[in-house]
Length: 421
Image 1 (cartoon, rainbow, N blue to C red):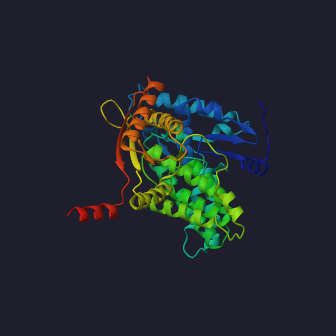
Image 2: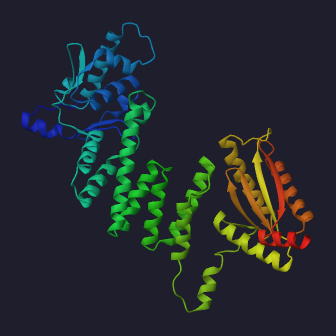
Image 3: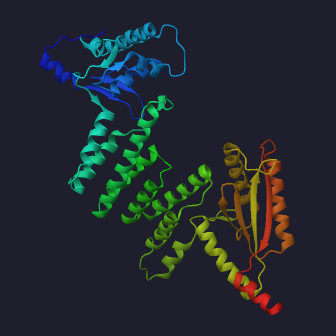
């Protein structure tokens, strides 16, 4: 073991290199020495250190610490067991190769504490300090945004994720997550207001890695991508979000996301006088076999166009709704459902014509459009897809059902009713 003997001033300077992190993981490092692995192997050792450091400067009564370490357990002679964990904690800290590491945790008058005089960097404490500074009244927006951005850079994930269910961790984790979200939102809005959109992109990309289900992060990222002219990347991210929320929550994109999609499409156009260039841009990059898949919004637009054509020319167009369910007709468990939807998508792509169209309508449904098709043919096609799915996935506990309806616009239906009366 490497040991150092240093004078008080030098020791203070070196101790400032003592680094404790609790966002995303629990780690203790000092001057290149990392004792995190030895601590994380024991939950109670990790919990004791994390709790005392989180409440640095406060004496924690022995009974309170016992409740933290054994919240729902009866432990024989817990006071002695606690002293054993204290010994293990001090032994682990000795691995930092500091002469006084054993004194970082004190025990006196029946209470434990992390010595407040130990100068060390603790990410959660620095995060709180930056947020407090940012939230002071009369701080200008630029300074507030910079403080918040520094805070977001410290937030590498939820507070003590390996202790996520501990009663004392839950409220703190929620508190820090709320602060993080507020910091990202304010900073993004400020950067947008001063046209620093390039800086918004990495900020929200990192935020999405931490919390992929916060829709604002996705909206902010897409807006920034549009603003800097990266429309293709914005469209790809919209598609990703659409699929993510379908798979996780079974919901369609919000109005805000749908509006952003339309903005991406609109902003991707520029003045062009050469019609051949425009035609080249309209073409698919490569002609794929099978039918055409698109998101719900363009599908809806194409449906309206086909409905008009059907009303005007008497064309036969059918819409089919394919639903995935379990043997009882209920929605399958998420892991089964996601696999079934992927398999069904592949089957539909391989089974329909180039001119056919489909989209995902809900978490367990696809919507298919079959132009120039009779009812009998449409029914036969859907039955073939259903049979193929069952044949290729015999062990998958999912069933396919479908319903068919002709594409007729409501105006045409009313006209038909008027003629009939």
